[in-house]
Image 1 (cartoon, rainbow, N blue to C red):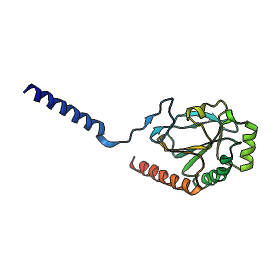
Image 2: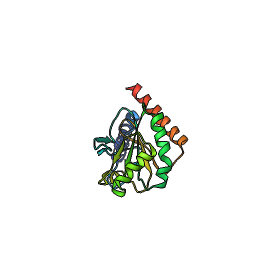
Image 3: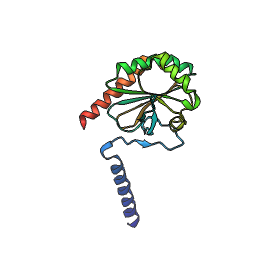
Length: 186
């Protein structure tokens, strides 16, 4: 009899824990530990970086729009290939997307980075990672590396290397649509 009662109590506790854990079925963003890459489903690290005019700008965190963070370097051939696509995406989705180019200045030369921006005619904000904190915090080991971050500050996509502009458009439209639907619910 005691054994049956103990078994019943254990089953009820497990069932209660399962119900408690799954109540509302809301997605919970996990904070990435300092030794892992920010990846889909995890909160994007937040920090301030200077732009080309040395004004401080925030990356990560909650915001009104979807955020595309693109880590690049002036000596990176694939970065040069994707720069026109990044500019086109910035223009096309400007009202619905913030695009920040983060130059890995600690691995680059600032003068060359500024020349790259001029040559590519980039008009979206370019941030300078002079001390390498952003590159370290986002665990960027190759260029280009890009992250799509939703309005709640959660990483939705992490892309290493170059993808086609049409693939970018598909990803952006997918997450813009989800962002807009979430705003309507609130």
